[in-house]
Image 1 (tube, helix red, strand yellow):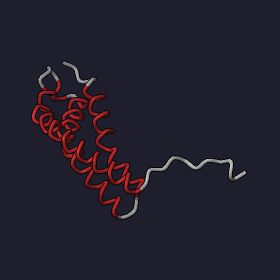
Image 2 (cartoon, one colour):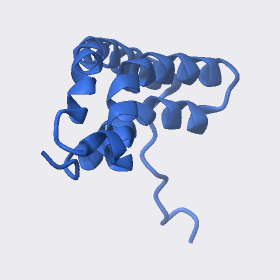
Image 3 (cartoon, one colour):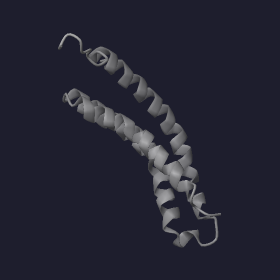
Image 4 (tube, one colour):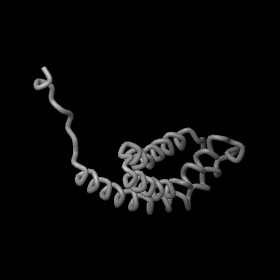
Length: 112
């Protein structure tokens, strides 16, 4: 019975390392776009009453720090990779994608 079961698809360590490098380059390029977003993030307060709107403040913080998450995520990913914690490395590499999704979602709810 054990011969009938197939093993799961697994990328080699060298392949995973190449994929991590590719993702690092991609997040570094996206960080440049995130820096532009950080410059324009105070514009969420242009609408009337947005200075007292907690969702606007959350959108401001998420937008202003997106570039930093794009730089820190891969750095932490590589540190975790070197320590042999592969799952945590991939989670750190995915952090900028989750941050971007959260930022886009929050910015949809800011009036004005």
